[in-house]
Length: 114
Length: 114
Image (cartoon, rainbow over all chains, first blue to last red; front, side, top):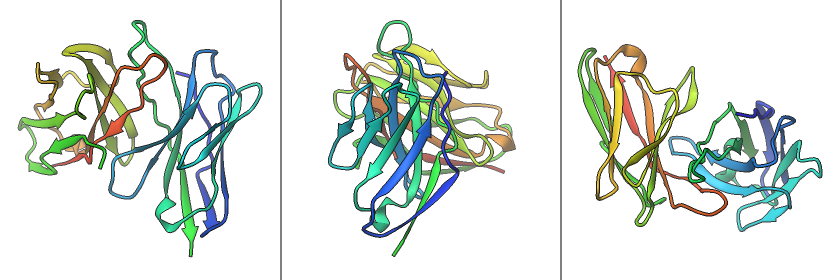
C-alpha cells in the first residue's frame, strides 16, 4: 500500500481555520485519498475523500495537489469538538472492485485551544 | 451514532481463553471490516467480509478467525489469548459503491487479557 506522511501533531485556536497536510508521493492513479478522524474513546469517523478534484462537504474541504502527491484537509472554523487524531489514508481497491481496506498511519493529533 | 453496533463494550478475560466479539453492520451494508487498535501498533486492518464471503485479509493471527452470517452480522473469534491481544477491536461496515466505500465504524470492544 502507498504510504502517507503527516505531522505528528498540530495546534489550532477555536474558530480559526486549520490546514492539515498529507504527503503521498507514491500514490497510484487508482488510489482515493480518504480522511478519517478519531475522537478520544471513539471509533474512527469518516471526514471526506477525493480522487483528483477538490471536495467540500459539511465537515471539511479537501484540497488535492495537481500532481496528487499531496493533499490538505481544511477545517474552516475549528471547534473544541474537532480535537482528534486525523488520518490521511490512501485506499487501494482489491481485485473484484469492492474491497477498499484502509491502512491507517499514526495520523496527526489536532489540539484545539479555546 | 454510526449505525454500527458492537458487543460487548468491554471484555476482561485470562490468558489462554477464547472470546467472541460481535458486530452488527449498518442496515443494508454488505461489507464488514475488523480492525485492531493497540498502543504500539496503532489501527490495523484484520479482515473483511462481503455478503458472507471473506474478501481481504490483513494482519490477522492464525489464532483469530471471523465469519459473516446470512443476516450480515459478523463475529470475530479470538482464541488462546495472550497478554498482547489486549486492544480495542473495531468493526466497520460499508455499502458497495462503484467508486469507493466509506467505512462506518462502531464504538469498539475493549479487550483486556490478564
